Length: 368
Image (cartoon, rainbow, N blue to C red; front, side):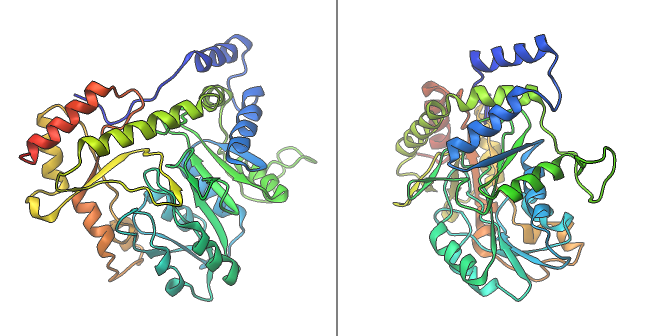
């Protein structure tokens, strides 16, 4: 079976971990945490990095740090990971959804304005599967309405928007370093910001809001979202070769596009203002194929190809419907993508021969 995603772990990561084990610095203190934070923030062009335990924690902490009032609203795409909406809900905020762009699959920026209300406090753009959101018009809306921008760049390590790195485009930006990400720490995440006071609040919040002046005395409810030195050691080694990893991803994306051309599939795009890193290579079946994503995945699995389905829109999730959210909402683009889309093996360890085998299996299933 050709797996969907496998990370590439090199000698630098191994040496860093061995140092942690040799010196005993294996928990949430040690030199690699600071070095990883500084290295990733610098790569993204941002002043401050705050490492946390995972990408979901990064989103939750970012929303927490903005000190929203109960019932305040955050506009976000419906077509995304559940962590985005949960970050709002866990902080007493209300997620407000927009449909996605039919070509980039990111949130449809043209639909944001109609969702702004007097309770709106933030917009959460999510760069999806490696392609950036169209940020200039989004920032114009945010600035005009005085809204914070919580940038979710978890799937866009190294991607750029008009030459600027994803992760540098929000007031606060969030990353995941899960095992399937371009830069991985196994589990892990980071929040970036240029605001020194906000960075200090984020550091306090990830560490149970311990006070410097009196130990075990808490005046705010924080979180235990710390990253370990061992995880940061892996991440630092990954950052040192990020250019190599991104180039490999882009090459794989271009190769898939060439191999799958001419099939009844919608393939990923790269807008003129973007550099797509093809974190996951997604395809969307044309309606006329007679297949949906489930049946397509089953037939590819029979041929030894592993796949993963696309996201299911937040407006269709029972966990939110049961809370009285999104009643009666329809977002047709997201609904089509959820039913017709999946992504193919996209791991950094994928070989050319494996890519050829995946493309051949896709052609067989589609009768081409």
